[in-house]
Length: 629
Image (cartoon, rainbow, N blue to C red; front, side, top):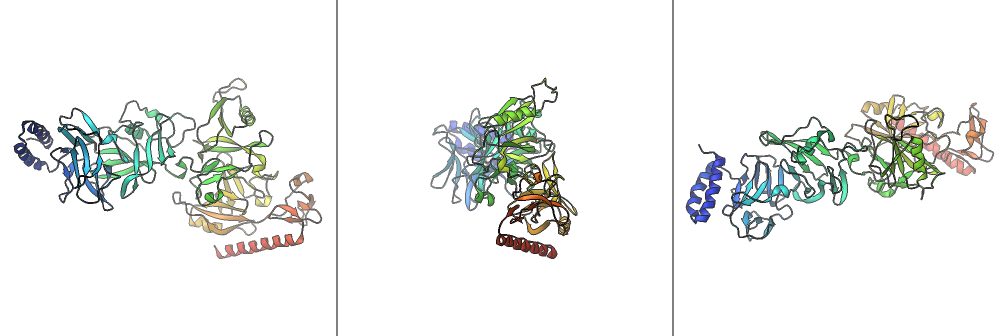
């Protein structure tokens, strides 16, 4: 018995012969009748165009994997390809994506040697743009791969194929090269070109980039790079993009949830990449039997995966409700925009210029992800690395990597990485994939006193807060710094909570709580503590199930001291015994301690105003705690 596929081949052959023998009518009638037995066709010829009418005729690929036809979005008509019988329809290619038909009067036909989308008045809405040709023996066929191919009638030469002109979807059988671009839809119901594109990096091989208009939005990390990150694409995705080339080395790409993909179209599933309207490049697995897809992998995975999401000299932590934070010694370039959540401008140094040498130091950050360095230097030790960066005025940061087999004073194989331009794309990371980074800062910009605790990661710990017995004020010793991760924590009566940021100007800090029980427990802060809940919180970080709560600290008493040397940072003070018997830096005669500015000031009116403010704030905090707000 003759198969449907064999019948279609015979029909195409006979149609060719018919035109050459001028016997079209007889053969056309006979074989068209036979073709009805197959219910659907997969080709368009010069004699068999696709008409947008009430019949809703479509092309269906030979193995019933893909379908081509007219479809409607937002009252407009398009010609596209979608997965066969997908519901809702999953479109993988659109011909006239930026020039839709306004009425159901279109035709998809071979005209002047080109595939064209025409309306009833022959206005052109899309074309393959091969140039006009009088050659009539041309055929367009929808393949089981989802590829629409225009060729001469004996299919010896492929003149045009949709695989070389994709819209937002990359299918199995395509091959990514530097001429191929995926462009997102404008919206869910508008397939016109949107804001995001995915393509190969023009400057580097085996690297891919998403751009938001003309600005880099995401970039895959380079394989084998020391500062590569989680943005490595999985091997199976790289395998798909290469059209299943054996040149793709699995060792150069990371595994992802045992993700596998086959190059064979005989299997019941296939993979595709979609440049989504959200800016994500998504890998989908399509089940041919179930007519449904499953999202397997995507990037960017979170706010910090977006390229340089916080701008220069700012760190990103996707676990925090507010992900971006200026590094200590830096401030937002555009404060108003920063405060509204637009972090793209990044941060700048508080000083107008960096003074080389005497007033410069380094902020030591642990477990950070950062963009690739600008240069390298074979260093004998970290001290050597630090000195070289300090003496080189354009050096903004360094990272030292000690060789595993280094022998004292004999090896120069250790490496010092330098950043001489801006430091950007910073992410707080984990010890397994982060690096220690030392960022150049000017000492006055850190606004530290001799009593300040050392910074913890990207957090300055302002006086009087204390993370160690020998710094800050002992009454505020409720913080702990994990030096290996750079994570600062707050020790409350009922547990320990991560600190996301500290604001010295408002005397507040935010902590993360995971559940309602923890939140209610924090409300039971010991009244002897110098800390109070404000009743305010940031939005839930739903991706991690946490809530951020704001805590304020009470203004401190005079600094404790053992000798006059301890009072060096507080003018007009002397180390003396207070009434309760503790030695503190007490103000000289005619001066009064101002706990808000942490200094001795003159003037009774000024002091009374300060005391009234403190008293009011204390009453307000106690009321908040009493009412459980």
